[in-house]
Length: 387
Image 1 (cartoon, one colour):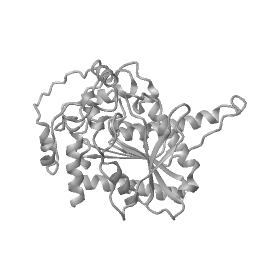
Image 2 (cartoon, rainbow, N blue to C red):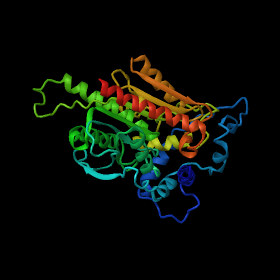
Image 3 (cartoon, helix red, strand yellow):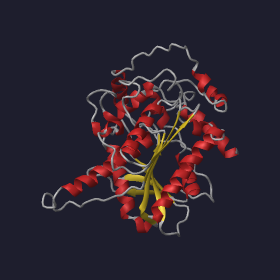
Image 4 (cartoon, rainbow, N blue to C red):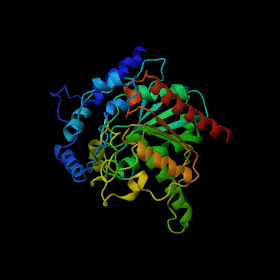
């Protein structure tokens, strides 16, 4: 319990982007780059939606979540806040006996820097273990301040190796830079299965928020690369290696799947008031894409919700709060997966906003949510082993 409270308090401070610490140095990104992304996000504004019931958004929040939520500082995400947030130190790893994160560096995409990975192995001497290739959240522009304890918890609770990708961040790196980093990591874990002690048939991808969006994009990209390799005759490119990198499961925790949410698709009055708003979403997607979120200039392949077909993707678990800005896009993506014959589980938590489980991990709704995705991941790994 004491660790949970520490993590909750840390989440309150960090998710507020350190507004009290106004003396923090300017962030790692050039000011002009972040400012350009912010300007692009404003060029596609969300149409005003009248609320006929004058609904108090707090009235929809789960009672256990309310006290902590009301301590949370109100903010509107900006380029300056992103820069300050990047300077904040992350939460240290949990001490032993929790499995300790190991830093690795692997070859990046052609012409790109190396990719840093964090590897957490709960049983280094075991062979044939499952693996979760994890992508962190942070609005495409930031890292996750609670990353290390989260990776350790997944590895321990699901008895799997966890490899988390420190992909390049927007707006300095636009699409498809992060996707290429994540794909390089997928290739690496397949190629180094013996070294990692893992079973290649039990490699899942997953993440939270922006990381969930990256995981969904990676699953689509791996499918499309494989289909392309099979369809092209060897004589066309005899030196190119065909890449069959199977993924057994997608773990999508309140994933960011649609750049149009909050721009060309206005949010309903009841959702998206807390922690992640329509304006924050426009800034995040505009930063990643390099064009205004929700516009006709967005490349279809960059956004999971815009991809024409989701057939042939791995089974998925998708979870989201009922008042999370992403609830509609996540439900719609689940519907598309179901219609395409992809085994899919969807969980919508009443009274829950974006990141609720991190802000109040000891609430009953948070414990139910975490138990569900961990159970789904364990079952996926078990099914893969049986297969």
